[in-house]
Image (cartoon, rainbow, N blue to C red; front, side):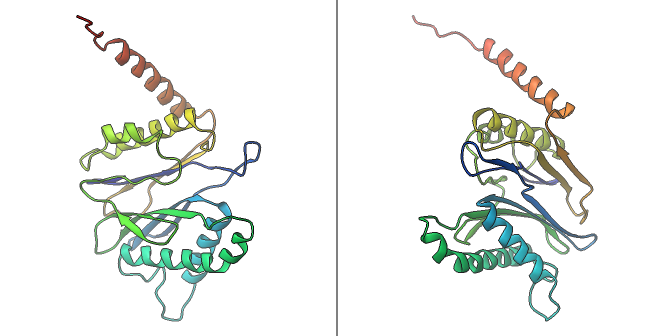
Length: 237
């Protein structure tokens, strides 16, 4: 979520390769140099593909040969291009072998953060390597299983939404998604980034049974039922 106050970014941790093959892996990767840049990557799709892309970015970031890396890029748009290039390189390497199993490269990312000298920015990078940027009219982006949690975000989030309200909204969105789709599950990793801070000061992982998340889930369910009961009945006349 791209807000006037900053960014809220979150990811779940469930991966699955079938109805009986679930595992947990963190889908959030951060690159931080306090005072200079904060870069956050959220991933979805094939775990093998997303891990390969992140590892390639980390390797390239350690270069000292004058090439553009996550640490030397001048804008977050440049970072999006670096992520896109890494995705295409991994796809080029893996595609011939995946095609032999009737599979396709499937990895996509949400990229957000801020580099000193520009405002916070938020991108969605598709599996093909092209990307879009969030803005005033569309202040949030999703990837992966999005449809169940999207309605609450559509109703609540605007650029003027506070970080505190956006945090509640994103957690309710995940709660709604987990109730309807087994491919999404705890833990949830969340970052609240304050504009121009150029440092990650608020990061939280919500595990199964987390008291705050449980209270939020219960309160939301109760509130929805109360709101529903308060709706006017249909006048058949």
